[in-house]
Length: 369
Image 1: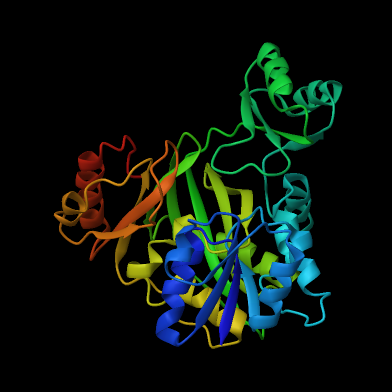
Image 2: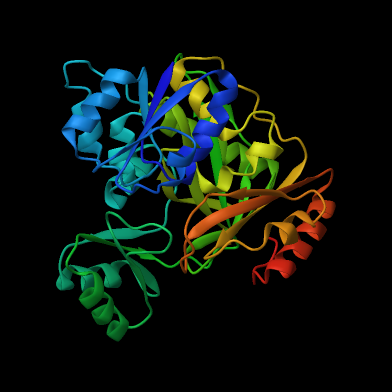
């Protein structure tokens, strides 16, 4: 059985690695000839819009999925219209919604999921009206193609608003209030072929320069877990979803405010490889192939640290007791996720102590949430 993956980054790589013990094969499509998944699976090199290569995916794969939120939804829809209609999971409608922040906010409102206050912006005058209605400080964001802190600017004054408009105003935008949040969390779950769901423990996330630096799980109160899981299941049901879905939230005064959704396996779920009974990657594959979902319970208390810019020496990482290293095989570049490492401990206190030592060793200037 062959799974097609549109996108061959580190997420595609980890999907393939999770699938081989199940006897699965993989075929990936990516514009980059040196894409990480290409080192562990056959790789078709070409644009995501290449109809010939998309047709080959449809022809050779039982199901097609994707590993990047900016894969063109139109390309996936085209797979359904070919001579051999491919099954696409998760649904392209969920991908398309997640690619437009305004549509995403409207969906959350329709499903009764709280968000920050926001306004759509398509002109400088509309930005000024949005600031009047929402207030300052706020964040001006592109509606599409922004991730890891890209495509956004903080607005504290009208002068900053003008500079933000000059920087971003060539694209459709969204303006939302700046939330002085207590912490950031994410919830990850899978929905299978018959509507069955499993939900992972809540993740506590710490970002730096818009990039996820640290995740700990399980995290937060039982009430946060119940709320986040209920919101997630509303979105899963709305799309008749199959696969892994992630919702990210700001927490302010005990209230969860949805920030965005990711219709794919997610960086904040990397801890599940060592730290959960079934990893998010295996459960994604189980879900899209119609196999029974695996248990999502934690094996202990986990921490995941992203390795940004360059890979530290493996010996230095592996010298830390209990640390698991994942090298994506990427070329070093400032701001680039090149790997991650995880650790699992019997207690939260033990995890946090070991995570602090690891962060200090890596000179990562973030604190345990």
